[in-house]
Length: 220
Image 1 (cartoon, rainbow, N blue to C red):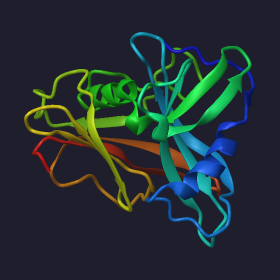
Image 2: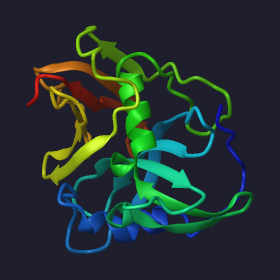
Image 3: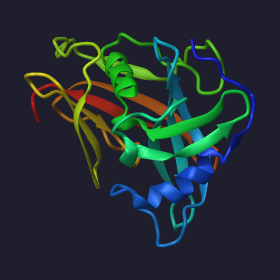
Image 4: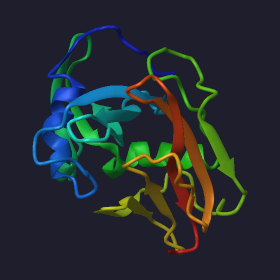
């Protein structure tokens, strides 16, 4: 299980994301810099214990209406070869030292564990507590697509206004769809064989839920 350290991160995640978010094609923000807060999420464990995996929800209140975005993050102790474009930035961890922080949709370890979660082979963990499952994260899996092998790695990652699609290696070109702008009214894709829903807090303190990610195995 991942250990959550009560320590500093310099610069902070929000500072890094404030500079990074406006460069994303799915970010619907204003012309100015985002004004961000952390509002929820969960973690997954790397079976090898090397890579930190977090699904972080941040809310931007710089515009007229708050906008909540999902950012899968992977934390590494060394650069990930070939993933320079996915690097959000580096930060100094008070216990672990320098960490390379990536958009996890491009990180094969995070992608493999997200696939495992969508197939009920991984257990979501609380965002800020060590060794604590998060029962509020709910997975719906219809049992199809089990031929998508554990550990399948990204063959292609495409980002657009509707979010991020991670095409995995395999004959049927299975796809992970990662929601980026969270909207409670939006359901999973009609062709999804699995999806995960989770919650976050609105700026007014209300509790919201939406689909965070889905698995499509029809080759779409």
